[in-house]
Amino acid sequence: MVFDVKTQAMINLTIQVLLIMSVSGAVFLVKKRNLGKHCVVMRVAVLLQIIAIAGVMLPSMLGYIENEQRSIFFNMEMLVHHTLGLTVIAIWIYINLVFAGVMRIRVRLETAMRLALASWILALIIGLHMYFLIWM
Image (cartoon, rainbow, N blue to C red):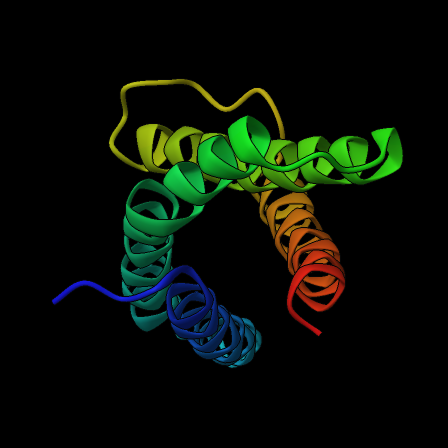
């Protein structure tokens, strides 16, 4: 099944909204001290995010950079958006390596998790802004 670019963007937007809802649920779980379920939700959410990045966002960004002329401000916004998204993944890897005993804690896990959540929310907001600039 091959979708046109606009349909792919809409599917990705839907996935992103569902993911942020899942992450919000994971925040609720951690507040209820249900860390096991929190970790499962977060692992699934970030893995789905990685698939969305590799399958939709990266090819879209590369094609957009190659074929579209946008302002320097839009390009900077895109760079910040992608940097924040990659920051979330890097923090997720760090947290999982700490839990696996591969790395020692250098930053409180609560601080790292809050930074990841803030980065994810900000990346979503910027991504929504970019979506509306391109497709609306």
